Each structure stands twice: as structure tokens, then as C-alpha cells.
Image 1: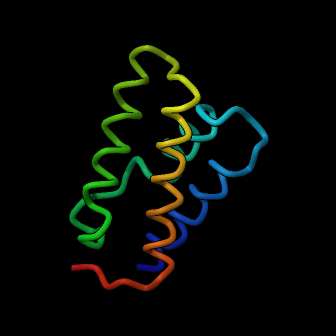
Image 2: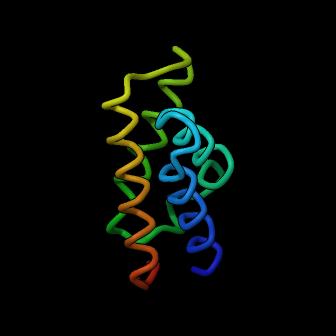
Length: 92
């Protein structure tokens, strides 16, 4: 759980840093911190969110960019998942 906590905490920081546009922060957060996570290692409460974020980021990579609204939704999902991990929910 500590590794997940670190990964999600760093990802949440990346999407909320404001140092780049939201989409760039989302791409960086996913590539640097979340891409290698196995869904099986996640709490049930966030598995569907993780799969959704992964699908949306991977799909958007084909086009190279998504609109700011979608990037904000993905960033919010990443922050939500970090909050769930931080709350100490047990993994299955």
C-alpha cells in the first residue's frame, strides 16, 4: 500500500501543480507514476476509476491532445484515487 500511496500522491501533485496545462500534467502524472500499476493491486473502490483513466489517457495519446474539460475530469479522477489511497482503505 505504501508504494501505491507514493505513486498516487505524486500523480496528484503532478496534475495539480499548475506548472503546465492540465492535459500535460495528466499525461506526465500517468506516465511517470500510474502507468505500471496493476488493477489487481488497487482497492475495489477505485479499480473502475483507474481503468477509466488509463483508457482515456491511452486513447487520447493517439490524437496527441484532448480538450481542457476532459483533462480536468481525468485530473479530478486521479486526485480522487489518491484521496482513497490516502484514506487507508485496504487492498483486496
